[in-house]
Image (cartoon, rainbow, N blue to C red; front, top):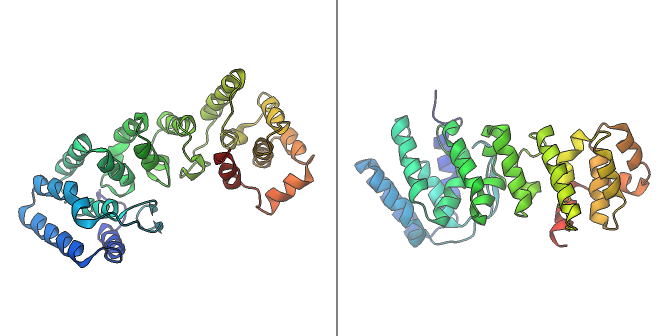
Length: 292
């Protein structure tokens, strides 16, 4: 089996072109020197030295957000030049020897400072042998480092593709607990599941009992599973005096096949129309909720 599920040389070249558009000639020359040294020495030590030293030589110029679909739908999102250069450098690590490659990446994770961890977790869609990094991903989700959590959660296609259901559910719950941008989790709707919906419903009841607010994005994940048992919760947020809650209820009703929920939505032609013309979406709800 090939170590990569995409053309790694093509992706490496594309990322290097983005680096070249934002780096100084001196930084580009340093990168090429490091690549030549790696190809000559072929040692993990040489690779690690360059990975660690990257920010000192490239600088931290912001990089525009970019989608690279041919690279497992990789997103450059909120990156600086040093982080992108480290991503490119990871693609230069020889991957033909599976055990040696995995050991080298594991060593990087084990020794990484916070910024290096953010880079590594963000690079998950680009690492060779993708099935090997599921436990590392779950470990990152359990961390309390905000940057690491966002690297795993935000615009990262790896978790939705490779995590099993319990690990995926833990990721989504952690995003809700820590007020991360849930709507930017790749695969959110495709990986919705009944167990997660039930966990979220229990969580909502706990928050209500404590008199605390609920992230309205929670109802997006419950919507496909609305039934007679869950419908009273939808009625409750529909009756909320917070417009963002009522909008979340309307969207949940629009994204379920449960007839009573469909009927509830028709009680507000204004909200139904806003959903139809896409002026009301889960994105607008998330953006409104983030400023409350």
